[in-house]
Image 1 (cartoon, rainbow, N blue to C red):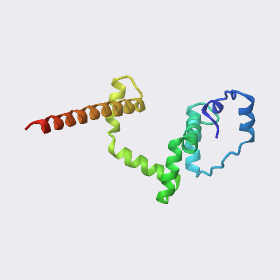
Image 2: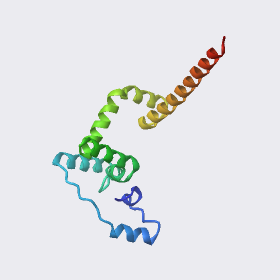
Image 3: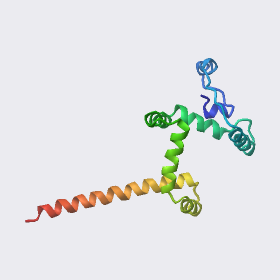
Image 4: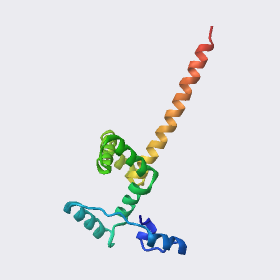
Length: 145
C-alpha cells in the first residue's frame, strides 16, 4: 500500500524502502462507475491525479490495526469489509448529533473531527471522575455503623 508521503510524491527515506515498494504487490480494486466518478471528483477538488484522501482511506482500511480489526469483525459476522464498515459507521452515526458537533467545532475554531475527539476525551474525564466519586461515597457509607 502506498503511504501518504509517497502518494504526495515524497521519496522513501532510504533505498531499501524504495526497493521494497517496487517489489511489493499492489491489490486490485474493482469499483462501480458511481464510486469512480466520486473519486475523480474528489481528486479534482484536491487538484491531484490521485486523491490523497482516498489513498489514506485505503491505507487505513487495509494496513492499520483498526483496519485489521474491521476485517476480523467482517469475517466473524460474514460480511464484506465494505458492509462491516458501513454497519459500524451507521451504528456510530445514529448516536452522534453531527450538526451540534459542527456548530461546536465552528465556535471553537476546530475541525469537526478534532471537536469529536475533544468531546470524547472530555466525556471520559468527566465519567471517570464521577465513577471515582460514586465509589468514594459507597466506601464512606459502608464505614458508618
